[in-house]
Image 1 (tube, rainbow, N blue to C red):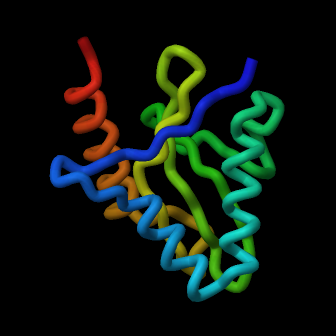
Image 2: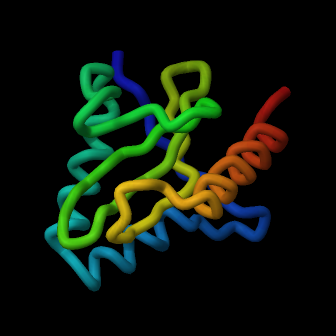
Amino acid sequence: MEFTIEFYETKGGGCPVLEFLEELKQTDPGDHAAVLAGLAKLRNRQYHRDPLSKAIGDDLFELRHVGKLNTRILWFFMKGRRIVAVHSIRNKAWKILPQDRKIALNRRAEWLARNQP
């Protein structure tokens, strides 16, 4: 059985990760294709570890693509074999900056508050 991938939506209906991917498609089609392939692989449990994916703490994980700039999609698991992508970044650093981690954690908390019974 495969996992499904969902994308965090803001209260206003925006979808930051999909917007990021759309911009990436315009600026770097090769990296865009690689990230989409990585997201497709996440549907299969065997890819939930290095080198494609890595736990970063606080129930968050990162999907990683290394190119001229490192591209990351931050996500978490939910019951029912669901993956929720909450934040995306692109930078030269190997570490996730504290402000990006905070954004991902805040979006995760907001998503959980809106989607828990």
